[in-house]
Structure formats: structure tokens, C-alpha cells
Amino acid sequence: MLSAAKLLLSPLLLWQGARVRRLALRLPEAEGSREGVAGTGRVRLRVLIVGDSSAAGVGAPTQGQALAGRLSEALSQRLGGAVVWQLVAHTGDTTRDALIALESAALHPADVMVTALGVNDVISQVPVRRWLAQLDELDGVAIRRAGVRQVVHSGVPPIHSFPLLPNPLRWVLGRDARRYNRALADWIKRWPDRWWLPVPFENERMSDSILMADDGFHPGPAVYALWAEQLAGMIATDLAPRLPATTPTRRPA
Image 1 (cartoon, rainbow, N blue to C red):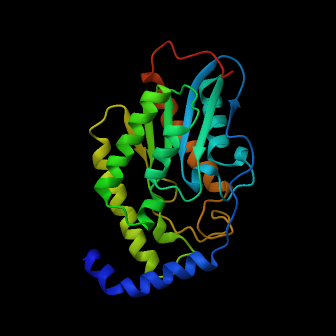
Image 2: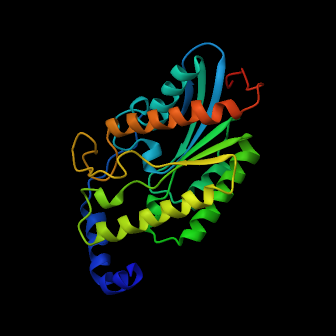
């Protein structure tokens, strides 16, 4: 049904997509360092965050108010020590782009990787199977190059609720995003060391300006804070206990 609708609506969808790209407010990525240490004391966890504009903090003024900063602080509080973090993220990145970036980045050792990818794959109409294959490659690179032991893939956000997008473009992309998430949930079951977490407000409308950034497309600081809390709860409760007792105590040089 969705494929038939896309075919019938394709001229309108293409026009709407081009118009949105032309008129959309372009916000910068959050300011601040792309690596750091949250908290004090013994290092309890090392986290690598990889993704697109949402991982890069578009919609938040600083990295401290974006996903990376919020997540590392929340983990530090839960684990009672320091959390070392590193961010590899760029606006507009698809999963393939993130894979290429991760291959060439100077990575610190990490115990857990968190990803925020999928929106640009949906927009680019990357087939679901190809998207999952690229996520698998991404996980392999993180394991090989950074020593990652556990991975959390954030689900694709609720595109059907993005105020920026007009209908039927919003409806079509929203349906695609939900299809991606169903496939991700099924795929994750194959891997005992990989997890997924739906993004906040999956079943809510995000038209409230308190939740969304001014561009009507990216999260605002309130969403980043809630997203980070949900991720930190999962990582501290479900992932950290699975890591070896020899979790590193050194900070990056």
C-alpha cells in the first residue's frame, strides 16, 4: 500500500521535499568539544556516540545540553564515577556516511557505542535491508577499532510528528520511519551484545516548541535531556553489569 501511495504521490513528494530543503531554517551543530570526561573519580565507563545532526546536537546551544553531554553526565551520576566520552557525528550523515567517518576518525577505546542514525537514510530512501547491513558494518568497525563491547542503536525518531514537514510528505516518511524501527527491533534480537531504544515521544506529537528546536525538525534541549536519561538508565542497568570487571580506569591522554 505504501509503495503504491509513494508512486502516485511522487511528483508532489519530490516538490515538497525540494521546497522544505530550500526554505528550512538551518541550525548549527552544538558548540563545544567532541570528547571529554564527565564526573570525577575512577573511570566507570567509556562511551562512543556516533550519528547524524541529532547526535551532533543540532537544536541545543552547547554539547553540554545536547545528547553527548547529557548522556555522559547521567551515566556518571548513575555509575558513581567518571565517564569518558567521544562524539563522531555530522549533520546530514546517513549510516554509510557515519561508517566512513568512523573508519577514519582517531578513536579512543570505548566500552559502549550509542548511535543516532536513520533519519537521513529514510529521507534518502535507503532500503531497510541495506540500512541494517550498514549498521552491522558500523558495529564491526567500532568493535575492531575502539574495542566496543556493547552497542545501543537509537530508533528512528517520529518523523510523522515533525512540524517542519507538510503532508503527505510527513505521513510517507513517518510510515517509513516506523518500518525501519520494526526491522531494527527484529534485527537486534540476533545479537546478545546489541540493543535498541525508541527515541522519546515516539507516540506523541512533537509540535510543542518546548520539545522541538526552532527549525521544527530537530530535538530541543528538553528532548535531548529525556533521551539521555532513557539511554543512561538502559546502559547503567542492562549493559554496564555485562562488561568485564576490568573496565578501564584510565582517562584518555
